[in-house]
Length: 405
Length: 193
Image (cartoon, rainbow over all chains, first blue to last red; front, side, top):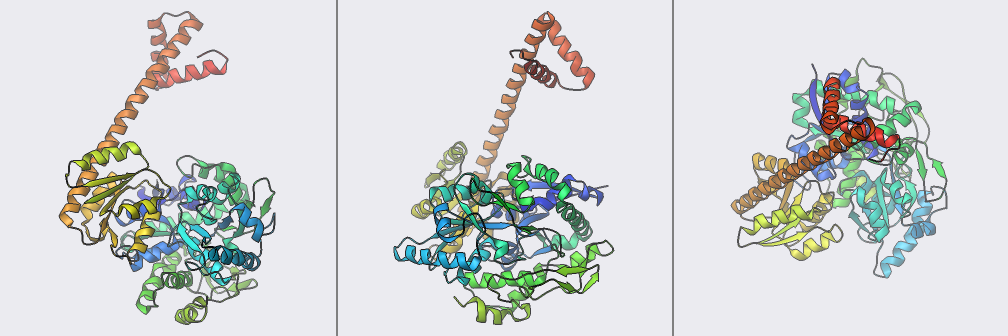
């Protein structure tokens, strides 16, 4: 007897785990019959989730937090018991701009690219025609990564440069038409822009924060409670899909599945590139290998660290320009649910961290961490500017670091 | 009252426009062009904005409204203060509505109901059209397959049709599927379809 469980998604490479859990039968083995519901805007993914058209959704992590806090629409508590992946996004600039700020044929150093970009940004601002960047959603990791990097390089978002929302499928068009000078988006959309000669990839977001949280599996908190058994079964199925996703032998098959019309409906070669951590930075160039461009499995990547949610909240306060609120922070800390993740995977071979939070950005070399099951060695997780985020001192972090513009 | 309809399908937008025109005191603006959306919306200064759920630009519009909350005429989503039932109905139909804060709720309700009906009407039309089109395509395939059998095997028309029907029955498939297979096979071995 299988139970139906529907999951909303946007056609992006990092919707891979629910799709693969379905197609490879991992969900069926857990007694779930997945129905995947494709949409083309986060607003519609969220509408369907909130009004019960879907049971769960592939979602940009900050949107789950914003919805819980009632930013943009009435508050509805969401839960994220599983992280669908870290990073996997890139910053693509119009090619003439890229030539001025980044080395040719290689990803640049974020500090050096930022310094060069700052000069141009200031010239453009002085000329009354500031640089403009497109991000996929106001409440997206793309927006926060881009802003964190710009601000850290002395380029003030909203003051020195403009940042606007551009839906992923329109990113290449917007670059080509000159509506924006740069975009921060997930795959395959950077590569689509490159293939069309509309832009050049200058940075991967993994260079801004080596282990930045990206999409989560989000659901209504009430649904997670009432269908707890099914949710835990889904987590096990997704975890198996994650392990299969990083198996090099499965790469070609998985790319072909994701490329299907009902899923991404995209060029299989571009998807295969992203899955293999390979990037073509500019049209006619050579493929480069950037290890861990997408990060879906190792180091308990799917574990929802509460500190990740808290970092996103710090950026939400910073860019919505709203004051810190201890009550809100408590709500945010409840969105990511490591307890549900542990409960689902106890007794499997998945390594389970003993702690629910960690100091983000503090690791510069591999370090073994305490677990309640299995072994985990965390590698470098630094921010590009070397700052450290201690979740126990969020207010202090905001006062000290984040507002330093 | 000023209503903006944002829809990349010009046909559906006109179905909506025609429906809302019945309301009388409404001025209706249709935006089918993706570029410059935010500028157009701010120029129109609408009381109500209707947009199809399948439009990727919803996130763009919502960002604009979020920013405009600090402006003189803040815009809220209709869902902000509405009952679950009508929200469900609008999502089923595939239309989203955004309304200037404080706008008379009963007026919104009647406009949204109308929008929902027009959206349903449009999708019915589309389904009927695609059914008609696929029936037509099937008939063409069967005709082609009959001609191929008549030419290659020297059968008369009734025999050719009987042959297709028999094969379909034996294989548990529809005649149109067998006809497609015949046409494809014929093409592959170099015959003119």
